[in-house]
Amino acid sequence: MFVEEIMVKDVITIERTTLIRTALELLEKHRIRHIPVIDENRYVVGIVADRDIRDASPSIFQPGDDKKELDQPVSTIMTSPVVTIMSYDLMADAAVVLYENDISALPVVSSDDKLVGILTETNVLHTLVKMTGANQPSSQIDIVVPNLSGQLAELSLIFKEKGTNVISVLLFPHNEIDKQVLSFRVQTMDPRKLIAAIEEKGYTVQWPRMPEPGS
Image 1: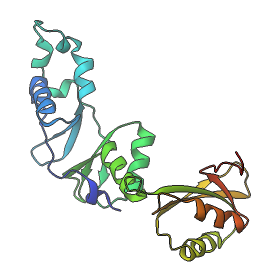
Image 2 (image 1 turned 90 degrees about the horizontal axis):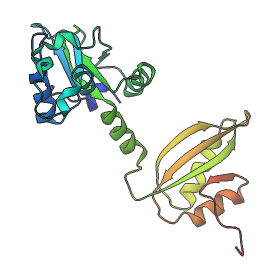
Image 3 (image 1 turned 180 degrees about the horizontal axis):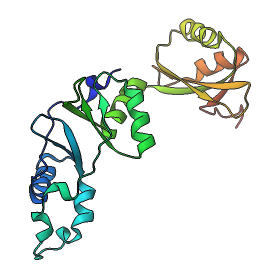
């Protein structure tokens, strides 16, 4: 999935000379946490986050104060240079950039470096929830498999035999190097018969843990 498919395209922006007070009003009005700062050609020259304003003027939370700090231009508090990402980059790559830079928003630029959108950690999380199907009535089954080719195909046959639709599948490392974990999200709310069929084939189901017989 590409960044342009999940980014916010209608971006609220400001300029270097915009007052911090105005930026704060925009953040509150639109219920957002980040505003890109652009020049007259839509090149990104900075970004202002709500925490930048809090750090610059702690008194904004105290009624009655003069709050002169808010009458300064955003250029005095904005983050610059800015980490950006291209609209045609993959969402997974964007997630890595967010993680490695410990940031929660990325201005998105076109091939000519002009602002075309913004991608936030919330956009990424919402997309991941949809991609994994975690927001659908379903069950998660984590299966320990040998680190060999063909395991996914074998398990898929079991799901087919039981008439169970697979919504998504993820691969995770196991603490034993010769094993890995396949995490399936399947379209059933009662996976007990399916788990029994998987275990009959010699696989270990790591989750959910079924009660022992007689317990």
